[in-house]
Image (cartoon, rainbow, N blue to C red):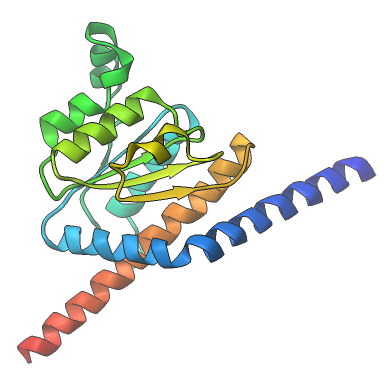
Length: 203
């Protein structure tokens, strides 16, 4: 029992330390990304979130968070590209799994929209293809990765990339949850400030 408790405490310490490290290192960049997202939403942008496996669940959480925030926060147009299993499996079966996100962006996204992709490795080929498509379409691109960032860090087409410096998939995903919740909250604050400024200008 003592060993289980010790292991639990150690894991909690790991994730708390990792989250603090990411927020302290990337706090200003997260705030800048949120400002850019707020500007995009104000201009009519929609958010498209995507990822594989556990990251697909996180992508759906991102979309739900922006679409249905609760507590009188402003709902924002967001969609998880993993939500429609018929579309995902049709694209995977007819063309290939590498295009399941890129083809959806090609069909539905416009310049100024937001593409947010999550990966633990940073090497998922369908995410790389999606970010390349998003860049071609003039979208604002946001990436969350782990390890050293993988191919996502080498792309040069992701406007805002946040890398969790860990080799543990579990710790990476836990820290990424903190990052996208911070992005959502700071985006809401930026929108409130923008609306207050517009109100003052019109007074």
